[in-house]
Length: 280
Image (cartoon, rainbow, N blue to C red; front, side, top):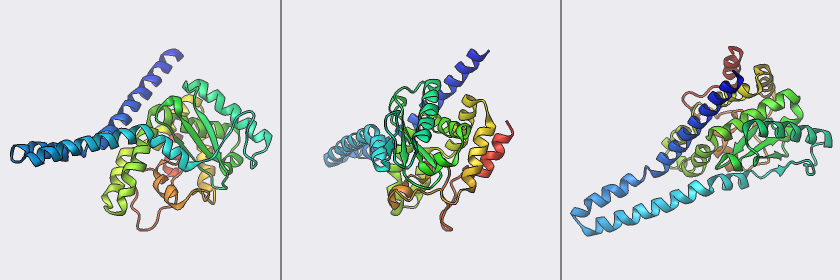
């Protein structure tokens, strides 16, 4: 029975990963419509045909580079210190770092992510985020404030949530949303909605459910989310303002929104996510 449940869970993750990659690919290739129109206008003028072909090549090149390098670029922007059994940031004691590594390695095995890594951001904010172009190259970033705030069970639930993003492919569409579409919202506000759509409006609730399916203990994640909800800071101050704002839709806990900033459609706040988990 447990084996059958694991197979169904893995099948759901694969389906989610395909949907995420498809969403990101469609978003990147949508501008090709302009090139197709120009090519069709080639029956009127050769100049249109040449312009269409050049536009298509440029879009294909930019899209390919974005697909391959977006997650790596995002990881470099976030920074952080890689935590291993031999290496830890100064903000964490040896015991705290060992606890983090031990919990993470156990979850790596469960999720089948031997190449994933954990990085700690030296910041009092309580939050976490994950990036990665593929499950084999996933990176989970967790603030030192969150590591110090949570007990072992709560920490396991949070790491499971972030690893679920990697396994479900949310990190692929998330990186495309942040680097390809979010910068354009300064000129066309509609692109903020497009970025939310590409990243996935329901990514956090689904990652919550995937996490508790692995840990089999919803109270662990409920307690973690409640502590984060009560924490005074969620926005990491160690990041530049532009990086923090562009990645805000990808963090475990949403930042406080400005009064003029609309909430993404379908987005749930922490209290609503906790209510969903309590129904399990």
